[in-house]
Length: 220
Image (cartoon, rainbow, N blue to C red; front, side, top):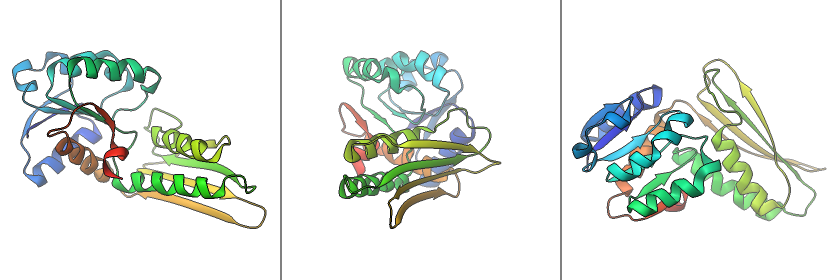
């Protein structure tokens, strides 16, 4: 397997570091994936950490040209049906996630379990997400995913509060508060490396894979 990195910001640099540590060849790094060599693309898994606007523009090229694609970019799920249809049309495997951290995905599973067990028992669910001041989307894609998971099991709306402070990599805190007690599920990232490691793991999972999958459905 060889990987092409689309987007060379903080996450792109971190993915490059993880690839180097794992001895996985990096076949290229591109800030403009439309100009990337199609012949190399056809033999490569693309890991995309770009801006929502860039992914919205480039996803047809990613689906057409690459062997498989891992999407860590968020902010495009309103067009998810057409993105999924495009990748299925081209027969290109895609794995996507609002957060590729293994710990976050375990938190999703814990959130679903708690919501299911507490449904109808008088608890109120809420989420607070805290990130660095450079993060563009609010609420975070991770918080949105967690909220949808809880709402699906809990049967009630989940309020999400977003905070932007300093250089915080990411904290997601889900709280179920009742009249007598409070339950909190919290995930705190110490760095972005966990996301990069998960994205590279997803790239490895594309070997022999077909179709479009959410990362959590493949690892939990």
